[in-house]
Length: 125
Image 1 (spheres, rainbow, N blue to C red):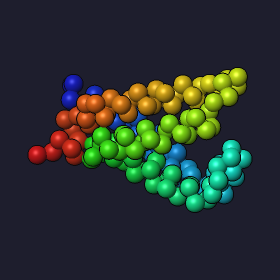
Image 2: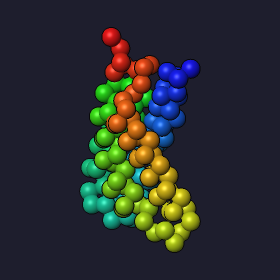
Image 3: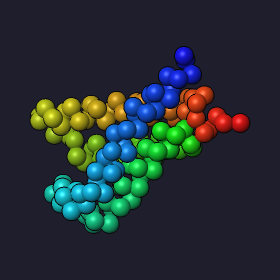
Image 4: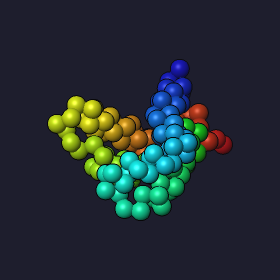
């Protein structure tokens, strides 16, 4: 039973990143406008690498393939995204998003520290 827990955790943890990246693919114009409204220069150019980080990092964690690197990549994305988009803590929704991102970073740090677990490509022999 214990060997399945990291797999389940990776599924839950990676889902938000994969879905967010896919959502951005299907709403490039809206996402670009949102980024520009938040002061992101060259939002259209930054969006493509953002999508790659979200989907690629999410798949890395999900599959447990180079999961530590995928988790580090996602943490590297979350830090500036949190500080840019979710610092108006006077707005309840932004406070929730800020705290959610801290929780996601905590989960990703567990992957960095302990790896993907027994059921993963990283542990295949």
